[in-house]
Image (cartoon, one colour):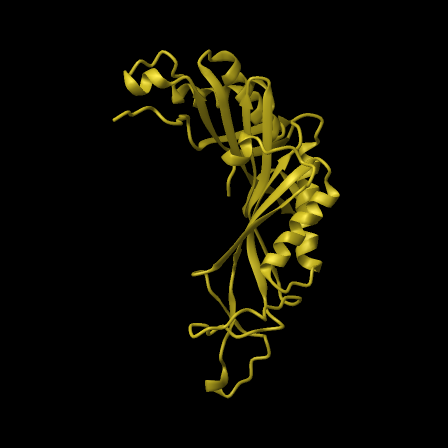
Length: 296
């Protein structure tokens, strides 16, 4: 029986990095979680324990901190590209590096209506993300957002679905539609893109589409959001979305002699429908490894 080593990688997961950039009395806070994964000719460490090609994961962690000191982090895509290229260029046996970054947002605390110079409050669970994969002189960038919670209290229906002996769900032409958006979009190229502007406008496009698209299903809403991004942002090749349906069930108030005209709901956290899909530009180049690395 033949046995051989299959695909493998190793790295440092979830390095917590907080930086404070001081401009006089005004401080600028960045809060990141950075993960690295290296691939290459690592056969010997698996088969014989020879670690001569293994850059220690502790060294990878230290590199994250050192790079944050040597140069301002900047946009998370650029920071990930710098780290990935460093590992590939400095380690002879490493042929590919994947860097994944999630940015946790903080807002300045208002004091007498003015944002405080150095006091912040956490801005919910939403995170800006990127996954960058570097191979030789190529790089692929996939960015996105996690935990973007949205809800609209009208403009959503769900009916016309098959019914069988196990179906109990009532059809509706007026329901609450709520979800926590996880989105990933892959860029065409890795240079000349204003990452911050692109992220900001992609998010705005998705939110506007969610708000204004009259929804007959969450699937229809998902595709409309992805399609709108591709029409508005030529630098994006594909958008992938994962939308858990945050169900809001109408409460039966009849035992209390009350009518419920879509006013009182029970918000259920589980189980939930999970709707996933993508919108793809027809002429887009084939996805690189970062797309596989950044699966939802």
